[in-house]
Image 1 (tube, one colour):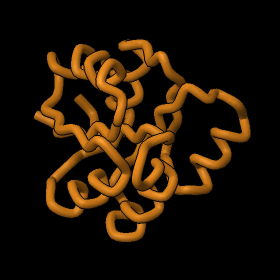
Image 2: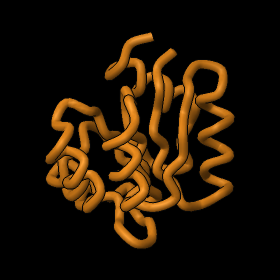
Image 3: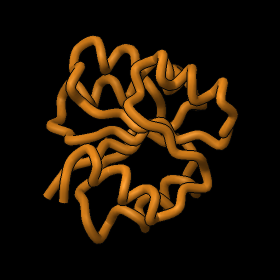
Image 4: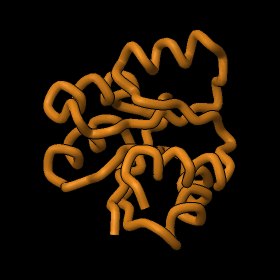
Length: 118
């Protein structure tokens, strides 16, 4: 079973992601960007779902740090800010794709499958 790192500081958003992912994937949670970087270094994850606005280290900084060590690890930005400028900043940080919150289960699963398969 594929393993996902979900970087999300908001409990209700994480509960929604858990509901979407639990049938198909194993997953672990990082509550801030720094935790996400540390967990990506230690764990064998197939993909990262990265909230952009988080405490301690935001998702853009965390993405840059993860990509520096793990350039082939796909990272999908998750953000409530769906502006083109936000998408551009995510891409510049190294995100491979972008999902707007609230995330639909169909869009989330389709995006994950594109990067990690079934």
